[in-house]
Length: 275
Figure 1 (cartoon, rainbow, N blue to C red):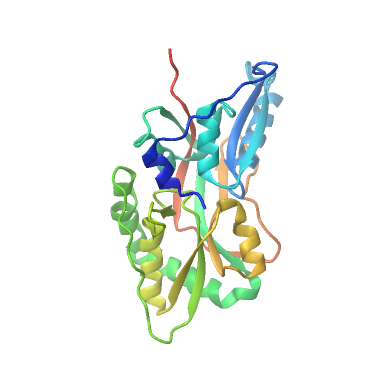
Figure 2 (figure 1 turned 180 degrees about the horizontal axis):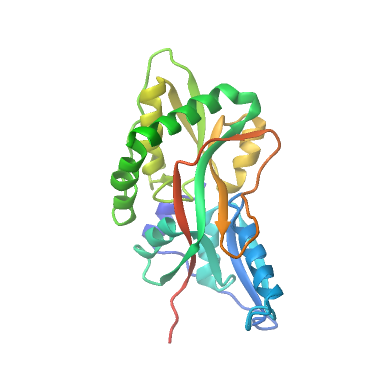
């Protein structure tokens, strides 16, 4: 499985790309992670602009290109196969801090809310996760983790840490992707780190449960959940957009989604202009 950080440290691979008919200037290709909800927001936003007859928008078509992992989207961005990537601003800034070809366009009108998702057959797991998140919100622990275990990692990579272990306790399998650094982050050695590990550590200590991490691509989360390969995954609960009437992340049948543990503004990741 491709490691996101390994590709970043090695310098994103620049692939040769040629088009037989040249680039269609009337089509904007935007990359989005499967299950992120970004594709729904971008499509609805474009439709809203078009219905208002906004100059320069109504005569252009947004083509969403879905990716199962962030590494593939970034390689296609550098090769020119897509024009931009829709993502949260924390991940965008993380990437830009490590690749001087990347420009970040913040979109303060979009708010992305992150949560955890499990299946309704795993109601016990849902209760453990949701109750811990609610308690951490109430006592200020989440605010502290965001300040000390997330924002600092945008500039400096987190060190992998071992999760606590409680002898004989329940084990919950959590899907990690590495596609949302520094939140969901997988280091070059394959170990998970970052804000979500700090979050899981706090939940484990409160609920006295063990977490087993299962690495998967972002696009494989829904299948891994429905098949029982994992018990829960980090998920986009919903995305709001000023001009959109409604927007939400992709859902699967029979899911349970916890309260949001973190909110971030949206952004567009693109290559810097040569001009």
